[in-house]
Length: 60
Image (tube, rainbow, N blue to C red; front, side, top):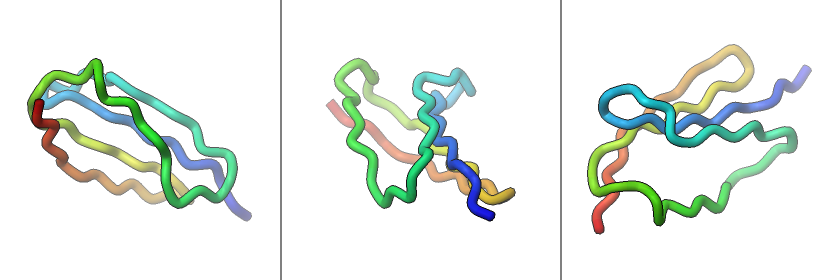
């Protein structure tokens, strides 16, 4: 049974700034980061009972 995936982007302070529910099997998601300030963010993907988190850097 396949589950939907949830992608969340959080500031270094833990504030959720983006969330998207993926309902189809997708390998990429276009994301407009124009409103993001320079700094580190955490990208969290939840799917099939698993959670993966990565730290990314946005540079302006």
